[in-house]
Amino acid sequence: MNFPFYIARRYLISKKSHNAINVISAISVCGVALATFALVCTLSVFNGFQGMVAGFFTAFDPQLNITSIQGKVFPDNDSKILKVKALPEVAVFTRSLEDNALIQYKGKQAMAIVKGVDNNFEQLTQIDSILYGNGKFLLKDSKLNYAIMGIDLVSKLNTGITFLDPLQIYAPKHDADIDIANPATAFTVDNLYSPGVVFVVNQRKYDSQYLLTNLDFARHLFNYTNEVSSVELKLKPNVDIGNVKAKIKQIMGSNFKVEDRYEQQADVFKIMKVEKLISYIFLTFILLIACFNVIGSLSMLIIDKKNDVVTLRNLGANDKLIERVFLFEGRMISVAGAVIGLVIGVSLCYLQQKFGLIKLGGDNSSNFVVDAYPVVVQLGDIILIFVTVIVVGFLSVWYPVHYLSKRLLKK
View 1 (cartoon, one colour):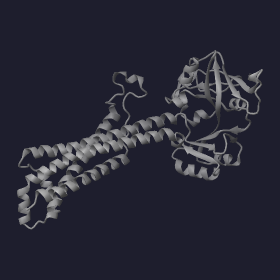
View 2 (cartoon, rainbow, N blue to C red; view 1 turned 135 degrees about the vertical axis):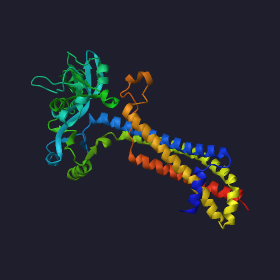
View 3 (cartoon, rainbow, N blue to C red; view 1 turned 90 degrees about the horizontal axis):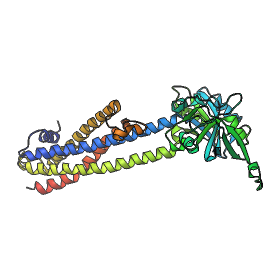
View 4 (tube, rainbow, N blue to C red; view 1 turned 180 degrees about the vertical axis):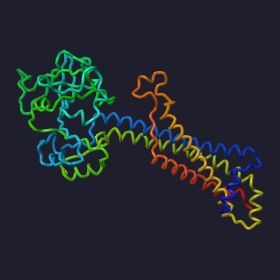
């Protein structure tokens, strides 16, 4: 066994001549453990919220989305698009056309994004999981075209979940001149009816702006024939999304973007990653402060063990070996605190996942999307936290031990 490590281990677990040093050593371990525990819980909560938000988008966004870089729309009979549609990994292929329009209902108006999709949109996403009302997912039948709106858009127009009068949809004509005497001629006007449901994504971007309808209606409204603004794909189970995405990029070339769900919501997830990074940095500073307890504990230990140092020197130990003893002591405190903090943090996160111990909003938790704080423990975070604690702990004790051993243990 390494001799300095053996001595340091005995110092850590054996009683000191002064009981206060035992207390300070225990406090040092607790300080490091508490900072580690805080890192585990905080980063896991950020992971939980990120997963929750991703779950909302999953119900509305496709696995892969193809859009044009050079323009708003592109023809859906492009040979590249047809080649993508024929890929064996593709389970659902849906065309989509979306643009801005004015919606009016009984004198109330709101700007919205009208998104026309194929009838298989229900198979593309988990839209059924976010629908509310007594109706069903229906975009058109033999006589009428239907609109499924976001809950906030419904609130703006005061239509209710099921509205009897039609929605009036106004979209400017691309090639029409405005007639001052009759401005309405510059707009395409059409009506949509209620299928008896609305969607609730719990994201303002969707709930307050989007209206779903069928693709033919959207093409008529926006004066297009075979154009689409995007092609949306759902892949077969157990398919590697990254590999398929790379294959589609190669097929489509540089004039098209192929985005997965995270890239479609890049701004949202970028903000969440920045928030998580800032929290990690602040908690690392707290960890650094907690390491000052370790420095205090080591300085008192060095003073307490002066006689032992004299004995070691008489036995032939040099200053470097004695310094290593106390360095090992500080590192063992850091490692012990890291391990204890990780165990407590992961255990609490497991209990939070299982039983939802800490509620959102206390007694008013029913007002939130989820009742309890969501947590997801990721192996990468655990490794990062452990490495951070060890590096900060080792660096924080090196100079103080080197300095104190020179000043306090002089012959």
